[in-house]
Length: 290
Ligand SMILES: NC(=O)c1ccc[n+]([C@@H]2O[C@H](COP(=O)([O-])OP(=O)(O)OC[C@H]3O[C@@H](n4cnc5c(N)ncnc54)[C@H](O)[C@@H]3O)[C@@H](O)[C@H]2O)c1
Image (tube, rainbow, N blue to C red):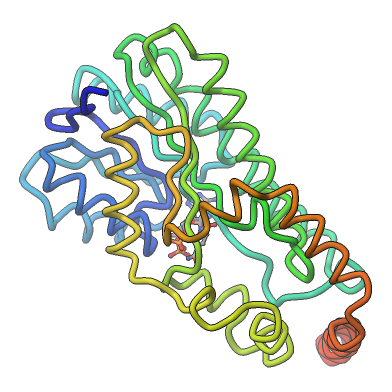
């Protein structure tokens, strides 16, 4: 299949100043793409844009959950560069601190789903007309959590399963239009979100250590993930998975999911750790409220 050349393409990236977003922006800039950088903090966006050639990056502060602002940003991108070819819907957050649904706050859980699901939708939807017009590509950042059990990480894993389906449905809906969509599945990547999700919480860290061998949970550098993401864009791939060993778990997910669900049902040590996590969260909340 012919390579989708990113030179002179206009690529919108949300979560652009985060670990994966910024590394991917740098990789795309090297390929000659023009960038529309979307994130919450304008100063960080300006600092990132300053790394690129004059005029190569549009600084577009915005919250992905704000549908009106996202539409405005797409209009600004088209006014600046004359078109929009690719959207990387990448902004995301994790529940912080880790908790089960018994002790999680409703607001915190719903915020994760709002940013990670509705934020992706509100990013992609206003881009579609331009992307179809230009035979472009939508890449949605999912996760190995799209098919990995979300125990103690329910809103995050739920959101990643949802956006995986968004990318698959969208790809099928765009078929024949000239445009394509696909999902990016990072494994563990060394960025601030890992700290947010697990850092500082010994119980959650021990649970992950117990569940996965070291090679699976050792974070890879964001630059490695970004290279894979850009290769995926050049193929307008259905799935881009990095590290690649996760592709096997995705391919055999029926077996993998049934096996892990069964194991988690009967794993007494894990049950104990979950109750410990609940106790830790109850204590934390009691201190906060006193
Ligand atoms: N790091 C990993 O191990 C990992 C694994 C799988 C998937 N992911 C996904 O990759 C994506 C990028 O994460 P990262 O690892 O670079 O983390 P990160 O925390 O470094 O970056 C996330 C970025 O999203 C931005 N953001 C958050 N809420 C926003 C909002 N409402 N509007 C606009 N921007 C917002 C943040 O400001 C931040 O810059 C996320 O969707 C994450 O879920 C990360």
